[in-house]
Length: 556
Image (cartoon, rainbow, N blue to C red; front, side, top):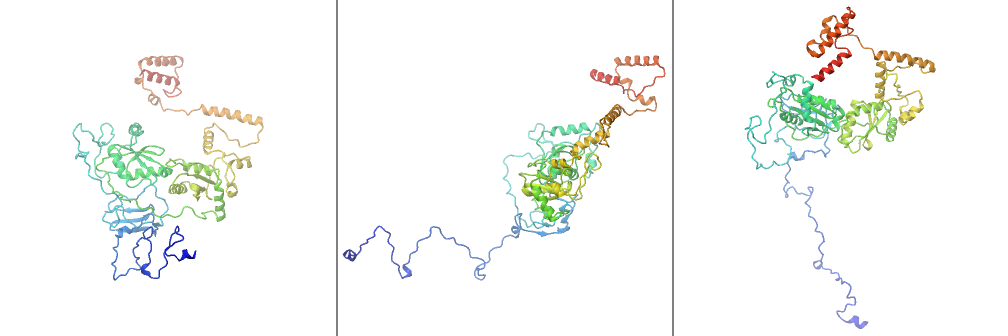
């Protein structure tokens, strides 16, 4: 082994990688390149030398404006918050509104979905959405489309095109008018002058029937009746006399407010309403040329900040009571389930009816946006009214409040609710409350209204004494049976001053000739038997006259 070790250039471990011996000179050191290149970061501003390095160009100040995801917040008070000459942005009872010179009313983004509470702050600087594009705000739209190759006819719809021209949309003329009436013309006409005479029932049916199963409509969503819908409705009125508006979602909670805003802002008249569908008539004397023209909003303004709906300690409750109500509300069953884009016309009535039986009410909103069921809760707080407790688990939990009063206190059939021990009674179900008090009978409001109607029409009676023997109860029933039959078969007598009044009911000229002989024979028989015969009622009120009318209709 010593001989082998003394031989030069002999490696005993040739299968293992050889490592070069360390070198003391730095010039001979070798470093392998890294697998991923090291990124070259720009020098920070702190290390920048202002004398040697130039200052970087600053971006446009318009691009620094905050958007909806920023934490911009500015507290505001009632009054003007920004003004540019006659253009002002103010905060009042209707939230954030915009005043333009010559405008008939204050413009808003949404006219129907503005809360009654005054805003406490804004999420973006006060900008006028109607201002020209020269203002310091970036354009967020798209580039204009290329010019179409198809040649569009240059004549306007008001200028009649040649007969037989295809693809031309005609403008709907004013109307309908009675025979011999013509439209009124004028630049400045009031709403009553544009509407004209009230429509008759058959005219309303004639106008509404073509739109029943038509998809040409204005869709009204969670934002309600917005400002740009004013021009959209007028564009519908250009082609048709009635505009169909379909409402879904949050605005349908208060349809009366939506109808009021539609008539007030557009100047039309609602002639038919079914659920969330509204038919808006433009008026007999409407003219598209003389319509009011409003500027369009170029973008949607950020919603202002409103006070919190859910308070940790609601008004009328202590902190412990509020916590107890929220805990019991988790096990409470909801009265209804709201679907997305549904019609909630009967929601306010359902909540009021539920408060008649329970101090706590819960509404389930699965799948709805948080902003949607919060808006619904704000509407219920104003319309019912009630106190909101929580929005947890996509559910609206409400309490009826200390000042709640039943709508059926004057009705003896309704039990008078008690506000004592509300916290103890909230967790009890309706069945448990009924079993605990045997003398209390809980009926639905619809059943109570039917009982009340029956009592008023003498078809039902209220027994003041409950402990009656069977014989006394039978006498009460027989007595009531006689009075109810007398009331049912009794009608008010019609007393006429003389013979002139009776002649107005039936005209001899309208009767056919084949029935005139029957009337003459009947008169002769009456005169032969008793010359002093006087009719007991007006002519045409007897059952025989009804038979004659039916025969006359069949013959005609």
